[in-house]
Length: 450
Ligand code: NAD
Ligand code: UDX
Picture 1 (cartoon, rainbow, N blue to C red):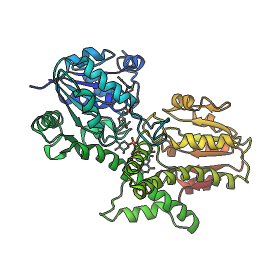
Picture 2: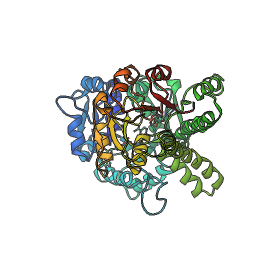
Picture 3: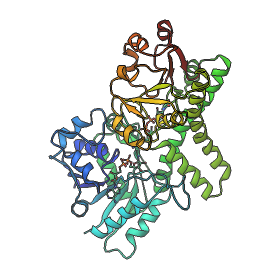
């Protein structure tokens, strides 16, 4: 029997993941619930103005919403109706008390566990979709199964999708991971969750492990990816000092099949809601288990990332005659990467704040993230937000390209140059523009790692 699914948390993970599960399992009912009514209303909006921007998401939602995919604030009703409960609530870095600045804040997680227990009307499979510290499933089990009327089996099914490619990653995943207790009921529960994915993912790509391995794998995978970005950015500084070109170095290093070409693009450092949070969480876990050298090793990945944004501003400072006060700088792109409106932990935010400290007159332009940028920078006066790149640059002394939006290389750079104050500088922190062409036009060009 194909049982109904509820997902608690209708965010970046819950929404797209459940939309794809519903599309590929037309005989299952899938309900996504959230305490945030505004978010749920947006998922249900008649004109499909969904709460997150993700390529192709709207097409999937149009196909299944109202058929077998539903968004609701009725958590109680949904938990009663469904036997498989995914939990995709937020687990941000804790900003207070023990572990502040490193550990995961598990308050949303715990309150969800208590809600499931309160509303349950039968045995349930609980699936951790959020990224969590290792051994969270033990805490979840302790809350759920203490003096309980029903049996709860807790599994870990971390999500590996990246923003901007969420639908593609969900439809064609490299692998799906389901971890659970190695007991008869645990293995039966694992098989039920495997069946959901087997509707479209080849069985050999669905990997099963014990629950602790699954929880740790997610943190480890993100730490490895973040570490590659910090490694190439550490080489970038050396390239600038020596005349080497980081893109050439990365290409040849990545041609070694043992290393591979992906995640070797030097830039302004990694952003996004996951990498920093998950690496810090790994640092905290290592410290908690007395593994201080391992903790320091992973902390280096975060320090290198912070340093990259400071370096961008120092280089600008030096190239703009050691004073930035009252100069106009246009930031091109505020999203943490292209194809998303998400600005969580975006390097552009850090650079904007460092520039504001220098009394720069800042204009921010971005095709998808301006509303989030306004919210993020609301405490700073005087920033101008402008959708039109040509207006954003009028009279500017410099452009700092922070996000590699696809249309940036094909802008009319001569027109942009003509409307700027001279000397006109462009710092392409993503190395995505045609530097030779820009120099021919008359720009002074800065890059990362060149
Ligand atoms: P998000 O903030 O976009 O969404 C979380 C949602 O949970 C929010 O809408 C919030 O209102 C809701 N929520 C919180 N407490 C609730 C409760 N008690 N009952 C009902 N709803 C509740 O977060 P996200 O980006 O979707 O991330 C969720 C989890 O997935 C995190 O652990 C994150 O690390 C993990 N993850 C995220 C990504 C990503 O790309 N964003 C990728 C992989 C894993
Ligand atoms: C990441 C993981 O890729 C994904 O598997 C996990 O589920 C969630 O965290 P995401 O943060 O959405 O996904 O985006 P990702 O494509 O990994 O990029 C993260 C950051 O690293 C971005 O700021 C991106 O610009 C930067 N990056 C990535 C680089 O600077 N260079 C690279 O080579 C790759």
